[in-house]
Length: 284
Image 1 (spheres, rainbow, N blue to C red):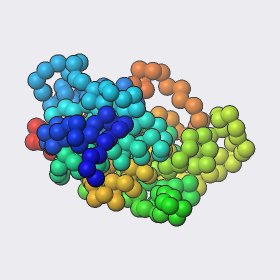
Image 2: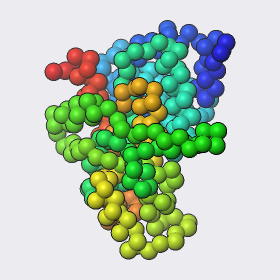
Image 3: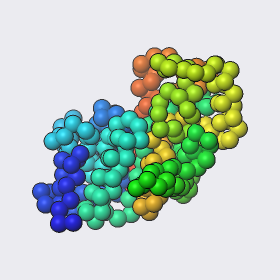
Image 4: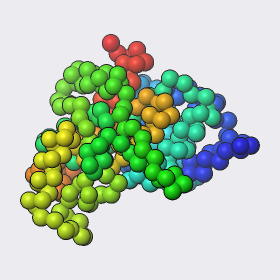
């Protein structure tokens, strides 16, 4: 096409010099919350000891209210909203942005929160593959009326590298596990009882969670399947790192104090920061 307008990023191939702006990107970190991804950008700015005030970093997407984007040295920090539709829109424009910017040898990370399945709150789960409501490692899309099935396996090397680095960080309980990634929040794979509508009992829920656990599921979130599928089909190395906020066998609602939750949510950021510094040779 003559011009590619990345509408939800407020960027375009004619209006912006994308190779100059983004050509040195080596690490792309995405997460649902705009505030959290701004906080991560400020955190990685400090971790990399970059010049300038991290409090003054600019939102590249300030011309739109859909997503936020911050560039910090070779790191791009972007919000993706909640659920499959929101993250898939962002990923389409992100992948095109990286292509137009002629980026090479990148690693993409999704940083998030999740419900644990047989894991205590505060556990960091590195995804090996994401499964659907039937515990199959696939993501289905309807394209021109036809169902297209894509693999949700993530890069094993990156996952193992993250797990190894987690042992170098104190108080960071970490496992490699499989998330169940439904497309909606309250029901289907999630089996939540606290929605506005609920057609099953607590016993039904626990039976389903036991089946999920036996199938290898260790946490539940919504975006890992589409993230893994799109990165894989585009040949991008990627990883998903989510912290558990509760054990779903023990309930559906989060009851930990705010300060505890803030510390939990920082755990994936700390691990990815350690990974980036290792890759850049800043620490041994």
